[in-house]
Figure (spheres, rainbow, N blue to C red):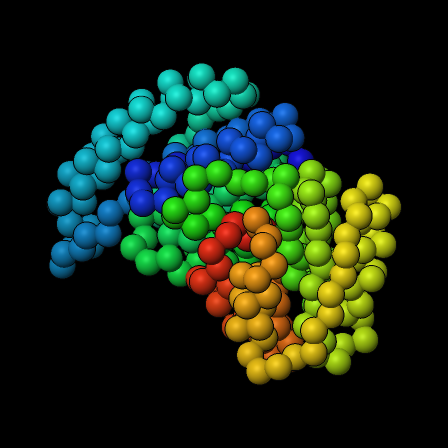
Length: 265
């Protein structure tokens, strides 16, 4: 893992995104791609785009120009390799088009310009790219890569992909715990994950819990009591939920987890 992309936009979670991205880049001695997102205004009249749209776009562009001017001197003093790129769109596909040669995308639980910490932006982006996505709460001010990590693993292909993507970072952790909620699936053996990580020089403990009620509630409780600084997960959920990229349990964690989540599909 070397190239990290962080979404830049003057909103409530920008500081969290930037700081966590910097922590990753420093830890892996990597490169930071700062993608500045200038949101396109949606203003309509009877003829399509209203005349006010151009004014709103100009205001948005000027606001982001000022935002970049404030951030660039800070990044220049961080002692890292970085570059800037800009997109004029609020479309998720425009963002992922710029992520083709990156190893990690850092986003906030607040999507760019969104008001609620729903995690929906992260889920949408993960659905459009194979690049892992790091989702950080708005109040996050550092990413403790050297603390404990919880891996929520259900034996699915997305969970496998999340573990593979996270392995370079898991090797930095002081402790890795693989948690499986036993739903009777034959291929959900956490020992397989521990063996995989061991071959990469990362020792992991395993924990299996029988399912008791809501998987989402159980995972949240386990995450909160584990003392983990961050969590790795794929699309968690069985049956028809698997047909949706991120089922109910994953969406709940994206919205309610109080630590960074690394997700993949």
